[in-house]
Length: 101
Image 1 (cartoon, one colour):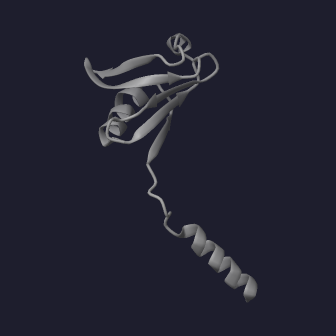
Image 2 (cartoon, helix red, strand yellow):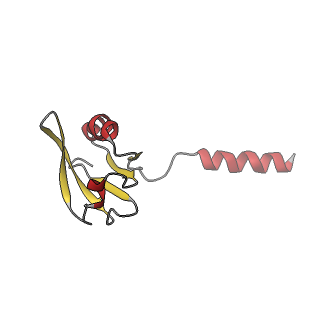
């Protein structure tokens, strides 16, 4: 019974709301046409900070330089700007930070 009670107390503590507010952050795996044209605009519109992670199958990803910034455009309209994190040769990570977050 004591073990059950200890398990219950530990579980309740783990489920308790955090004492500090948590800032949401979204990670999307896949920077293809679907990810960049549908997911990125939707997440950017929400104001949540996010990252797009992918393997550089496309030679364009390998050309990314660490710290470089580029726009994401859908139908010619700039949706947001992403900053490259890493060199793009083995993995690519694009980071977005909203003005609101």
